Length: 116
Image 1 (cartoon, rainbow, N blue to C red):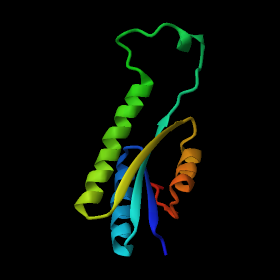
Image 2: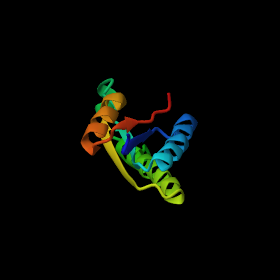
Image 3: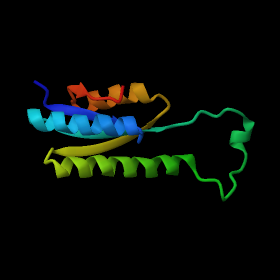
Image 4: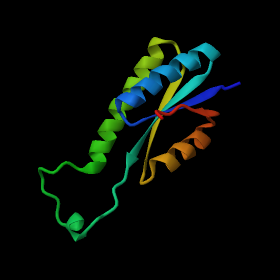
């Protein structure tokens, strides 16, 4: 049976539904969970992307890191409230679906509960 469930999130309402269902499932079978968020690295689209950054423009990497902290804290809080062991992790990458599979392998997860 499943022992370790990966719960990836992008912060969307559909991800929230998948997380809630995943936590109920993990609780029912006695599994632990890993909450996961991909900080999407944006590929340069033009030379303008290499121009000096305006001080008022938020750094996309920092915005992604803040989102990761916010969304993963929510997973951890929900898991704690239903007594499901939980760790969280984020990674930077250009391809979220490849990174989710990589994270499942890295953490030894035997099930991925996704929003689709």
